[in-house]
Length: 197
Image (cartoon, rainbow, N blue to C red; front, side):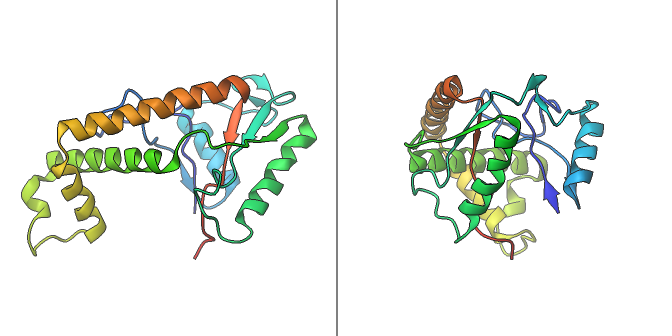
């Protein structure tokens, strides 16, 4: 199964959860059995036809893609994943796209991870408790995955100051990302750290 999370504005905002950030941490998008079906479904969902030779109406030729790789060693990858992704990315060279290795990590990966996972727990817990009530996740009668219960419990325990702190980190990351887009038109890194199992 292939999954695509497009740019947040393409399919509109997902209003089903409470997000403490002014930008989404995830987006809705299609799932399909083949990349071709995925592309067709995205076109249908967005009511937009995509031209493989352009991005947002701009020609690919002359674009600069920053390759993050393993984020300076912060994201260990199984053997062969980084090489496969870099090789696939090099196909863009054939249409005049410049692939440039990003030498230094754009942001501290540990701080970014802590911020994202904390915000994720807050969003999941708020949504779940609003939908099912707090008691649905307490006691031996709970019939959901223990990982989901952990996310809900973690989110419930967060105080406003903790959410504000990680939101500030997320906003710092957003500023760093915007700076990177002054130098690159797109940024790429592997979508997975391990091979399918």
